[in-house]
Length: 570
Image (cartoon, rainbow, N blue to C red; front, side, top):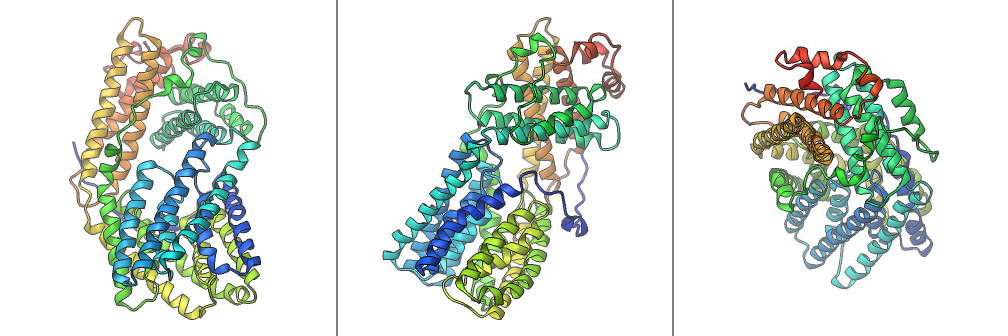
């Protein structure tokens, strides 16, 4: 059975403030630490006109804060190289031509490449926006071929410093990202346990818990394969979160939250015993390779509509700004590039947030401009304060962070020379409105009919994974590692199914989605996951062997009358 998906364009919920990130202060402090030394050095040398190039490298410190440090080192290195590479293309283009149409076209192609690569690699926030801002602004910076190597050298040097800033916290809290990911999984599991698996919102809480647990395992995987007592303890805690996912009504949410609290700071990781001796051999990251890595083509192919939207929307936004006589068309280009999300509905939300944040941001710029114009040092300090504010606030809602990002971007243009504030404000407002409108129209015009195909593929993958796990459960003595691998594969497939379904539900101009099949597949998959957890002996003896069929088992049996207790708990 399929049903058509209705699409609403909300306003109030789009602007609603959320809770700040647990680590909001880390990117905020990191960007200040990365930006301040290069800018203050240029200030002392009287060369603030070069600050745009050092900012390119310094802003790389915004990336990778949720990644374990081994993975962060690699990710930050690639971000620096990607930033310098995009800057090189822009500076060469600026040195070779002053034709605004050509420069906008180059910027649009660069934006599409940056968006696609960031999505394919899942680099995380701030995604392609910072890369596109730097490369697009550089297209319209006066340049000669002889200046390009020196400017790239400044960006590379600042990027190296940003890499050091990003890695520095690892000296004091080497397992910080893994601890946070585990704590998030425990808190999510506690929230699901509060529902006992039956209360309102339990399906959403279950999906959120599965995603958090999967993300935590991936965090431990990304940290590397070296044996480590701390990571071993984190694995044990994640197993407890998985037990809560399988048996929410038999779980104590307060204990899960207490373990999550203990993971904050640098204290000792709580030590918990494996529920059964048999479970101990199932732990370890060697068993966590749930799904084989996909080829680059398989990761890039589904992003083709997103790449086309970005290229078309950015190009048209830039051309429209040029036609209106706006002096800085790259602002319209960047506005369009910042809109594109996983589907059209999310793109609409981001467009509203961007416009509201930018309009409030120009008002803040109008208030700060007289102060910043007092002295170059005041200009640098204002930019540092806005950098901090942007990263501190953007986690609560994108529009709130944009209130700081907008005046910061306007002040950066004044590093080379002081400009008329009224002209800057007028251009920025015009470019924001043009970029948002044209960018959203492009998102609607470029349909993504592959969303339904990807959902069908995710459904088939989840159903096959469930059937494979069920066959192993039917065996008298399944091989432990095979059962563990099947469980991980099924868990990953269910997380991917939910993400794919959410993305497809927000896409327009496509055939009706098999929503009922998605729900049934998720229910059956999570029942099978619960059965594998019990079969593996991960549920404590006193709650598994000495009780009559638990509330979770009875609920599953009620939802599927054809299933017996033995079907659920082999």
